[in-house]
Each structure stands twice: as structure tokens, then as C-alpha cells.
Amino acid sequence: MTTFKLPLRIGTRRSPLARAQAEMVRAQLSKARNSLVAERAIELVFIQTTGDKVQDRPLGDIGGKGLFTKEIDTALISGHIDLAVHSMKDVPTILPEEITISCMLERGDPRDALISSSGVDLAGLPSGSSIGTTSLRRRAQILARRPDLLVKPLRGNVETRLEKLNAGVVDATLLAFAGLKRLGQTSVATEILSPEKMLPAVGQGAIGVACRRADDQVLEFLTQLNHDATKITVSAERAFLARLDGSCETPIAALSTLDKTGNLTMSGLIAATDGSVLIEDKIEGLSDQARQLGDELGARLLTKASSMSWTINQ
Image (cartoon, rainbow, N blue to C red):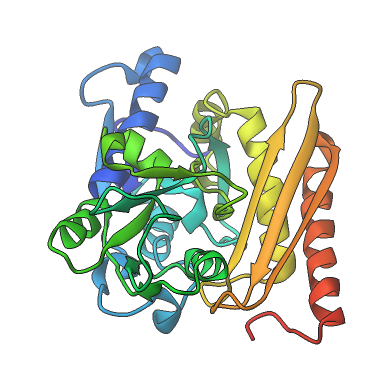
């Protein structure tokens, strides 16, 4: 067992959204453990990741997987920090063996929000309007519905993208609604897109907390924060992603929900980046089979793609 001493060090990225999410974890830890209530019992450690450093190229061009987690993982393994707070949509399906996602907070709204400078929704955007995003998932689904729109690269944190939108760089952009809510900026949303219009990224809206597998004390702290339904549904989505071997070069989307009786329903999608091919399916089953259901749904989509003589990453 790791010898534990205060302060408990939380590793996080520097963006306002990452800070807000780390503060959520800090607040819940303080509420759950009397020993962590003191003002300096928990310390935030800010770490710049490759995804933060490189802003002029698409994520797929600079490595794809782990761009927002690699440096934080290194700090965790080395003992520089005790735990790390991540947006689950940024976490690779394969983690370093020393690390585990020990808990997930209750999931926020997983949907995407459209923000347009003119205040019109996706259907109302004039032909030729530009939408800024580097997400291939968003690009594919936009072009599948509105092939008359232009999708332009737009990277940066929430504030940066909103500034570029206001400056007229693009006519509209898409952001995760959960992030806007955590930043108190839901008023900028023009339209909240239903999953039928825009299936979210795997894990979107969920906050995961990672720690070292051997750190029993921190594991004990974090177990109390876990939201079971969130971990079940996100685990199903991540199994789906793992089956497809998804990267930042592949448009992949999924969303799982649990009903009151413990039944899980999951929708999944793979697509061509230009929106010309959109392959979708749905699966249902018991919550204790979450990972198996995600894996099976991924296999189904691969079979459908094969029957169309279309391959993922094409």
C-alpha cells in the first residue's frame, strides 16, 4: 500500500473547462472525506499536454490517441500527482498498465450544441455557411445531413472557439453541451442537437478520475465518488470504441442509456469523413453485460461495413 500524505495532488489541463472539472472532483472529495476538508488538503497541479500545445493541426495529424492525457499519465506514474481528472471522450481505450480509471462522476448532458453567429439552427443555416470543427465525427454527421455546408478546421478550447466564431472566422461551431453548462455558458447555444441528429462522442459528458492501480488509499477515496450508471454506460461505449480500434482518424459515435430496471440501450455509428457513408445500429441488453454489448455492437457495424465493401478509416 502506498504511504499517503497530504496534500492530495490532482493533475489537470489548464483550460477553464478542465479546471472547472477538477474543482468538481475536489469538491466531491472534500464532501466525502473529513480529512480532505482543510483548505490546503487538495492541490491542483496544471499540466500542459501535446493536444494543448499544438493548435495548428488536426489531432489525427499529430498522433490521434492520448494527446490530452499522455503527459498527465506520465506525471501520475512518476508520483508527481496522485490522481488525474479527464473528460472521458479524451481518454484512450488502452491505458498504461500502472493506471486505472477508478471512478466516474455522474454524467452531464452528452449532447452537442450548435452555436451560430446568426442565431439560426442547423436546418436554417444558409447553403454555403461554414461550420468550424476538427472533429471528424461532427464533420461526417453534419455533411450527411447538410452536404451543402462547408466544414472548416477550428481548434482550441471553448473560449477560443467562441472568440473565433464571434470574429467571423466561421458562421457556426459545435461544442459539448455539458462543457458549456460547467462553464456557465449555456446561453450561447443556438440549438441542442438530439442524438438522432448528432450522435455524441464516446464518453461525452462524463468525467473520469484516474489513479495508480497500486495506490490503495487514493482508490479508497475515489470509490466513494463513483456514479455506477455512468461507469456502466461509458464502459459499454468504450468497449464499442475498442472493438472498432477507433482513433482521431475515424468518425465514430456512440451513446448508451440505462432505464430504471437496469436495461441498457446503445446506439453506435461509423462513417466516412465526407458523410457519404453512415452506418448505424442499436443494441439492448442487461447492464451487467455492458462491455459485451458494446463489443457486439462494434462487431455488427464492422460486418455491415464489410457487406458494403467499405472499410473503417476509408
